[in-house]
Length: 143
Ligand code: IDP
Image (cartoon, rainbow, N blue to C red; front, side):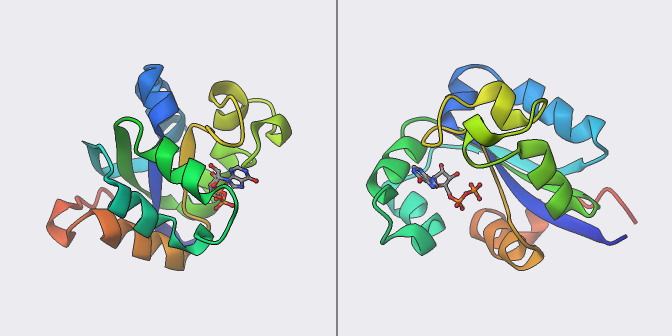
């Protein structure tokens, strides 16, 4: 088992519906530790940069518009196999396909507004964490 860090966003739809605590509770119950967290309202430039790999996709404009529509919680989670564990907690991108009991099954309304983001690999996690947090903002919980 590998101690990893992953990057999470509670997206604007879930923040607006007051689901921050419920979502953090799922992470903590699963053994993931929050090592950094803050609320931010993304600028268009910040959201476009975060989702740059999707810039040619037809949904890119709607995605950026949604992600800038209200505040989000950006969070760094630490734990054994944190990247995969978080993806399992989140469920499939499309909530209609997400397994029962996952965050997207419980809190997302559509593929466009799907409650949470989570890094898909250790490498992307490192990049995404650095996009939002300075090293001194991270507070390791596990030695
Ligand atoms: P992920 O968030 O599950 O990692 P990605 O494929 O990286 O999924 O897509 C990033 C985000 O872009 C998704 O969470 C979703 O909000 C949006 N998205 C992905 N595919 C579609 C689509 O086919 N239509 C509309 N939005 C999409």
